[in-house]
Image (cartoon, rainbow, N blue to C red):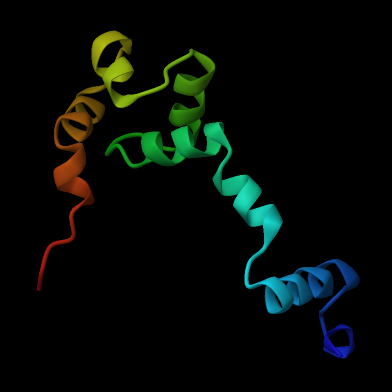
Length: 94
């Protein structure tokens, strides 16, 4: 079966079988519903902020973009990124 494929170990084979049998991977769904992961995703989408800055904001207790707007010390780029957050996330048609 799958385990016989080169570079496929037992752990990966188990995950592949779960996806085949159920159509999803429980570990991934668990990860995607994690509150901190959601905040990291939201904060790293701010232009001028990366994972390190996003983690600092979470550690400082910021929960939302409004929290950042009201309380956080932001660089100029982060202020611009926050101001135009939704616009930056929109795709530009070709």
